[in-house]
Amino acid sequence: MADDMAGKLDHLVGKVKEGVGDLLGDRKIEREGRLDQMEGRAEQDAARAEDAVLDANARRLEAQRAKELNRTLDGDLDRNL
Image (cartoon, rainbow, N blue to C red; front, side, top):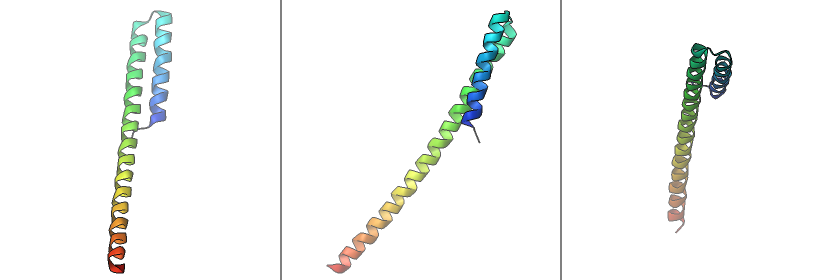
């Protein structure tokens, strides 16, 4: 399961690493920092996508329950008429 905070941390570490590489003129560290940032963003995206799926499933369940309640209320109304 993806973790938004872990993604943020990876992104932050990558930013620092990129800056250190730039400061030292070390292209390898700078590149690694950019790659860490990409990985961090991907982790954040995955976590947000998982959250969106959970939210969508919760909304679907809520809609199904509302439909069932509506059918029950319609049945009660029909019996009372």
